Length: 189
View (tube, one colour):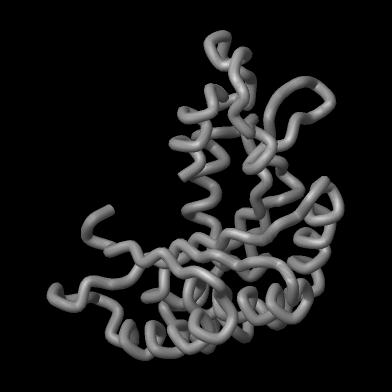
C-alpha cells in the first residue's frame, strides 16, 4: 500500500520527493505530511500485536515512517489467530493507541476520516481491527471510516480453523461502524 502511494506521488523510500514530482498539483498532503527536514512522512499508524511484519516493513523502509506511529505489543505474542484475543489485547492498550490517533488527528488541517487496512481472518486484523473501528466511531462520530478488508478465500483450505468465526465477528463491526468497505480477496493479492 505505502510503496504504491510513494510511487504514485513521486516520493522515494526515504520520504524525499523525486525530481519529476516537484511540478503538478497532486495532493500529497492527503496521505503524507511534510516534516521539518523536507521529507514526506505517511499519515499512518502501524499497529500489530506481534513484531514480525512491522519489523520487516520498518527495516525495509527505515526512513519513511514516523517511529512514534509504530505500535507493537510489548507482549509480542500476537493474537494467535483468535478474534477475542485480538479484541481484548486492543482493549488493554486502547489508551496508548488512542493517544497516537489523537496526535495524528490534531496534526491534520482538515480531518475528513480514517482508512483502516486489515485482514479479517486472523486475530489481530479481525479482533484489534474490530475494536479500533468501534473506538474510532465512538471518538470521531462525524468522520468517515473506510476500510480495505482482506477477506479469506472460502474455496481454499486454511490453516486457521477459526477463520469463519473471526470473519463473522468482524463483519458485524464492519457493518455497524464503517462507512465504506473495500473487499479484497486474499488469494488475489
